[in-house]
Amino acid sequence: MAGRGGKEKAAGLISRDIEEGSGPRHPARRGVTASVRRDREAEKLMADAQRAHVTVQRPMSDDEDYATMDDGEDLPESDPSPVRRASKGKGGRSESSGSSKRSRNVVEDDWVVTDPVPSGPIDGTVIPSFLGHVASTIWTGQLRSELRGHTRGTFCRKLNDWYKSARPEVRALIRGSQLSHLPSTMYTHIDMPLICAFVERWQPDTSSFHMPFGEMTIMLHDVWEILRILVEGRLVSDSIGGEQLQSVVMEVFGVNRNELLATHWKGGGVFCNSVVSLCSVGRMSEFEAIGWMFLMFGSTLFIDKSGDRIRPACVLEVQDGVEDVAGYSWGTATLAYLYRQLGVASRGDCGQITGCLTLLQAWIYEYFPCFRPQREGLTPHPEAPRARIWITTQQSRTETRLRDLCRRLDRLTAAEVMWMPYGPDIVTRTPRTIYRGWIRYRDVMEPYMPDRCLRQLGYIQIVPMPAFRGTKVVRPWNSSRYRLEHPVVVADDSWSFFPAASTLMLMIYTLAQIPSACDETYMEWYTRYSHPHIMPDMDAHPQTVLTRSNSEIWVNRWTTVGTGMLAALRRVDEDTAEMWAEEVDKLMHDWHLAK
Image (cartoon, rainbow, N blue to C red; front, side, top):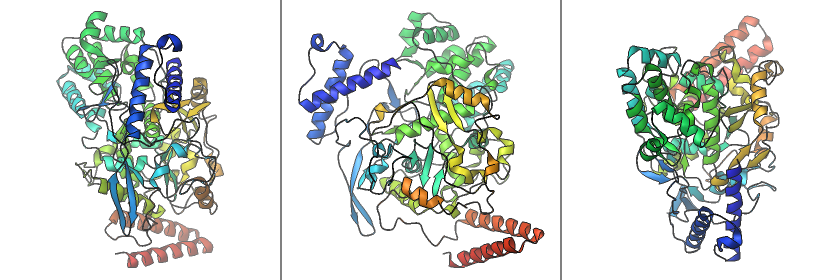
């Protein structure tokens, strides 16, 4: 934490030097290290390039981490995403490339909303960091290009082969973790334009996607249903660093420090191929299982930007054996880590996104039929991860498709959402999904607030309770300065007190007879405090006529209306029966209008 603060302090000094027109000063006068001076020179180079309207790549230090896209070409972690300027025109917009980064000086709290924002919140108390969000400039014509998504498809395949060829006792240890299925569950093809369109709607202040009709989010029951990893259990909170981590890795690998640093270690990470070569052959069963779990965590749930390397922290919970792995809430850790990556990726200058993108993409498929691919089969096994029921293929990755998806989201209606994709009684099957508090993965803590998305639990959406705020929050346009801190004891205590406390009290809410229902005051509140639409095009308003080709929406609506109508008739409640009669009439009317 101290290191992070030091970097921010150095960044502040760099900004002051640039604004005053002075270069880096002699170290004796400033009392700073060579690395800080190098960073200052890099910042000055970037600033000069921006003034000259050219794009340069920031110099890399020898020990700096690199990012890779699907085990491919190395990329700098802070590589900015190009911002594209667009001029509005009839029926669309003509686009031309512009600056690679928004030209603005680093000013403390310039990302905090203090006045009404065009296309954004009128009142910034709910999403105060909106001015640091990429959506804050999309309305003015500055369009961000597609993010780079990180996957570990190559190593997932190696994990599958490793598991199949392992001895029976090793496979038994891995199966006992209840995570052996994850490498074969990860998607080979990630639809990055679709992911990017949703990232532009993610607001980290509320841990939710802000859609035209209200908030939605990935909940704990979604993690269980999609990935089939447990959400009950202990929080993943172990965190050590430096030489201690190296010692743990040395013990697992059976190598000394010189051999580790010379052959298997670079930039704070372990080469993935080293894990395979050193742990898959000729080792005791327990050590082989530990090596498999080590590589699995970094290749499925906690993917980062380290390319062909893996963070050594992934070995902490298995260093003493894999017997206790099933006792941790890996589902909660996965969600907390993904929340954080979505928050960072939503910043205006960010060009990459990490985390379990399979979880995010499958979640989109579950709730939004209009974006679904073909199903793998009509009758998937009920205990299989739902991520496996979708056939993913390589999708077009053009700028045109990305913007078309953004416009489609702007026109999306609540009636087009599959609010309960897993059926009723989700709280009974996954009680922890109504936990309300902080979720954690090591030093990453994020607020989890299901009351903001009640329709996903089967209830009428009302104005939610105030959002949780961290004790130290920095969410500026510059993603490298992104920061959220909160006392770890708060997260640990709120998690352990469930269900006696930290629970969403469902009895105070009203069950929804119509899945998309919300309180009459909700949309008025939401429009004031959020940004329902992102694209400025005149044709980006919610569509009034649905398409007949979207069969799953129509089947879902007919099923919902028919079930509710029959239940009402059995109760012989005149008012309720009349309401359902009106719903049937409306549905038939919509069907006749559909094209």
